[in-house]
Amino acid sequence: MTTGLPELDESSDTGYSESPEVSPRSRSVALVLGILGGVFGLHRFYAGRTQSGIFMALTLGGMGIWWLYDMVMLVAGEFPDAEGLRVRNWQVVEMPVGASGAGAEAVRQLGAQVEMLQQQLGELAERVDFAERLLTQQRERERLRG
Image: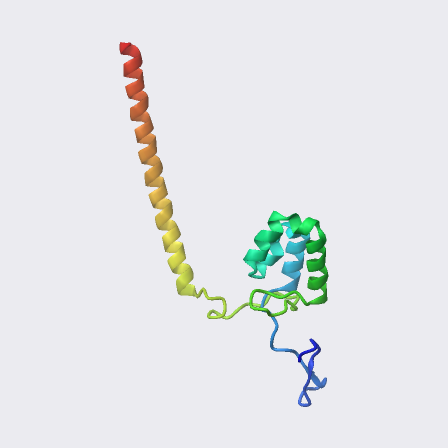
């Protein structure tokens, strides 16, 4: 049974080692998000807990009670992320490429897809504009005839 206290490590200078079960997410970022938009669950979305973030947004932080509980848990370093790891690090830690699930190649592919979607959206907007002009011309002809 774990108590949440650091484990005794005789090889360390201090005698204790940090628990390896710490989230790579930043507690300071989560706390700022919690303060600025906590009733909408922004800190929960940041921690990867999207389902509870949605419920929190719908209930406005459980009318403030749920939000207050989360703020206490964040300050204490006991707020869990989506994997159940505690958000304890104050500084922002860069995650390794494989840890986040989105490597550099995946980001490049997403960028290319976004550019392609922007081009398609532009073409679609041009087509809609052309169709609106044709309809307007047809209405004008009908109005002048009638």
